[in-house]
Length: 332
Image (cartoon, rainbow, N blue to C red; front, side):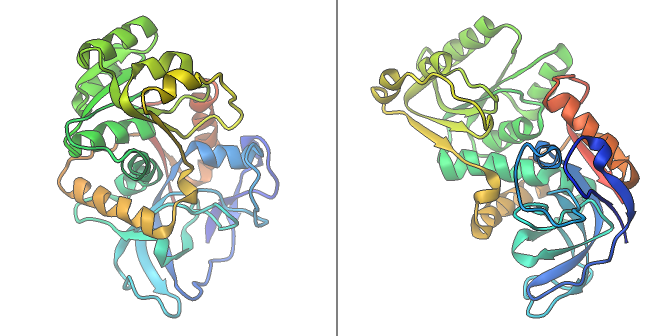
């Protein structure tokens, strides 16, 4: 099979494209003919060596995939040959990834693709959709009628948080950096969308929308959270979620936090169990089928140009190039 792979970590140029053995599904695994895979920041962190994980050599990157079941390993129970599936959590913890024509995936990490949903859409919704769901529901126990704040409402995770919040009957305040993206936030369902370049305007909008009470859930996506600013914007018994900024060590105002009975949750999506992720996938499938989730694909690359796809992701994640709206998809 054709695959993108690398022998050592480094810049995007370490990624090669060529022939690799087609995997044979082992016990409990499914061989998926991949129709689309999506790029995530974690793919670039692993490739650069920023995140130290066990890697096979050669290593095929990529967490997300969608495609069709080609063959079954022994003792598989959930799927049949010919079924369309999607999933995430590949390319992690020693598992080979999804930037290839085929992948052998344990059936616990796969979910049926709803009718009418393309492989591109399913792949692009995978990691970011599960991440958004874990934070909102497993961690913060979001309830109908509550208000959520999320930075970057057109980003991969941000756009999923906006839409899942609305699907759950809650309200959402978000930010973007230009008029076009602010309008997209509103199209995705945001009750309030504010230009993040004007921090005072963001804070004022939160206070105005909540009547000065603050938000019940603050979904923090920034790599360097400013707790001195954000904790006063939390409501009584507010919940804050952090899921970025591995090296961050911000000042934390303990007193203002605990006297409001607030809670802080940190999580990494790849630590969630298969059962926890399947609960997320069930809701995502239901919302995709009901057209309550839109997935924006910003750029599609052929598999042979995986290095360019990684470069574009890094430019926007680390360099803040602001040249991407939506997810990057790679197609064999």
